[in-house]
Length: 523
Image 1 (tube, rainbow, N blue to C red):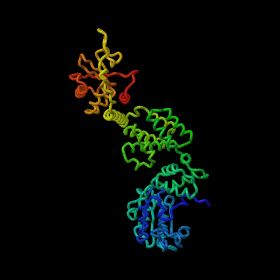
Image 2: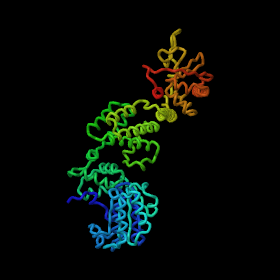
Image 3: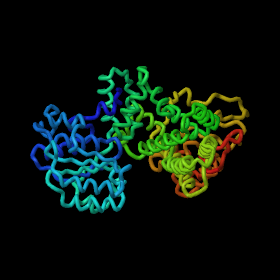
């Protein structure tokens, strides 16, 4: 008869248990030194090794020749327990046997000495499912157990247990297994079973298992059911999820306001009979990963991703403000609740939410306003940084010949080659504005950031310098007395002809009514 892989590869010693070294070391020490107690409580999420450790403990505590706390596996007691041929090891699932009558049967049986082994061990799985009356019946036995009786209680929801029960047990918390720990175990099983397992596929299985070894091994067996090589596509198809590339394309389409791609991706999920809700959870996880790399320089320690995937996330996060990610996360989370309720068409609900997210200013509440402000601050910081760090190209020095003006016929009009077409003859575009801007940046990088997209014209007759800015917002940030004085002083330090110059500002709109980035944000 075929035996499933997770049962076939269930650990037989504490040393074979993955990811629970702290717990197994304590249990081994107690068994090796005869310091076991009468009641244990194993807590943790599913598939983390609670039942496996309980079975190993029951075998090891009765072993005739324990090896450093591990069962030897060779003595009569070990073989009897492994063959499930003894009545001294009692396993009970409280999910289906949660009435007080079952606990009373246990209470009545504990008075009898073990029939074959040294200890009678009761393993009660999902103990939080017991009724209140059953807990009350169990409490007295846990408080004053007979000699040679050990209780092992296992639960995934320790918060549902009465405090009186928890306080009478030695508690061990089983942590979720990491992707690396699950991947290593899957590699051992795949090599032993002759399964061709791709490295990326093994990591995807480990991530989908969400810290549970049993789910990971079960998914591996499902993917390798027809002896075909197990790759990422096969795992995605078996688990009913979309590829990471599809999630990345969808999120990028949202940020780029590419609504056509949004409909294409959701349509692909729907037509492939994939679970839209599962795809939505992948989007939430991806958004969370972007938030982590955005705020934490050590994100690689928290994200269960490869180095390549982490760096790709960092590049993606550069273009998105943290506040916008918070807004996206809120919108995704709100929609997930509706998707799980199933009261709407999941495809339509997903498409409409993503289209709203892809608008320039999604939402109208406080989170949406914070996202707009955060995006504006990010753009301003970029402008400021570029003005401070960027250095203008060095202009070649003019030769004496170049400095001399060409002789003009008497009475001929002298035209400034730097004068922009259509400008007044009195206003001349100054060619050394880059040098002036460099001087401004040394004193005020913020103002220099806004001035980097401006140009200036000088009127020698009026001794006036006019600075043309691209939009009204820039004008409101620059049209201040201290900024005008800074520009005048910087210009005078570059060329003495600007000494005593007055400074004024004007808005010079871009061609074809093109709007600046800041105006687009503020719309």
